[in-house]
Amino acid sequence: MNSPIVGEGQALHRGFLPPVTGRTRIYGILADPIYHVKTPEVMNALLTSRGVDGVLVPFHVKPDGLKTLVDGLRRMENFGGFIATVPHKTDMLALCDEVTGAARNIGAVNCVRREADGRMVGAMLDGIGFVEALRVANADPAGMSVYLAGAGGASSAIAFALAEAGVVHITVANRTIERAKGLTERLRAAYPALTVDTDADRIANHDLVVNGTSLGMRLNDEPPLDLSRLRGDQLVADAIMEPAMTPLLKAAEAKGCRIFPGKPMLESQIVLMAQHMGALA
Image 1 (cartoon, rainbow, N blue to C red):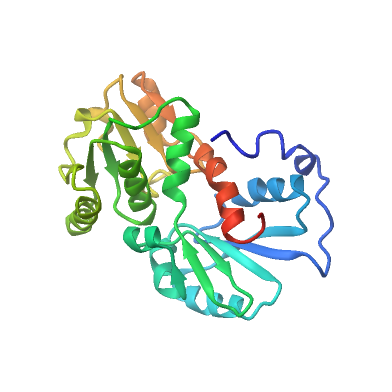
Image 2: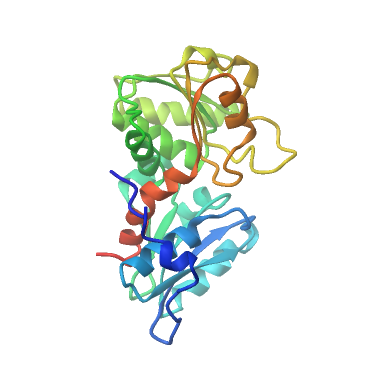
């Protein structure tokens, strides 16, 4: 799938955002922190290009306020839905009235549609966007062995999408080993032919190395994995949108690896998100 927004955001970035009126449909993105998100500019460019009278705005909400906000949004009649990102994807599963089968298997939700009666219907689209971004870059993951840092919502979505795409092995590395084992058990149950393990030291044994954690978003973050173990012939991807060049990607590029930043992942799933929220047919 080609990037659905290439060339579509020029009018928006020149300042020609259509006026917000009493008929405008409102959408949101929920995060903590919120400064790093790129979704509003990308989604609003898409909606503008398609002639949709809608706008997506950022909501900075901390975990202890998440349920209260979602309950309030249920009662907002001109609200169409929202995107959930770090750290809310896992908690969102229990706050939805209905979720897709993929979201249930993954254990997280990143896109929610508000029905006319206020019911919230959740889906998980991170992994699909990640795989499509690789394919657009001529790096089809089928047949690859993958090292995945993280076992949270984004990592789980990426793991299931990679398994569906035909990778042969996934190593899940997480600071909490029980969480890593939980993800590998779910993967093994859904994809019996897939081999899995939780050996965090086996970085060099893989074709594709992926950071599915939030480590690298802040200047003082520790690396998501041992950077010295990267090989120059590996593909290295990071799900973080901002900064575009994380410490992992910088280290990988210095070693000669082919790198994949996070924004193309967003661009590959943005239409799917708009469709799930009902903004696009």
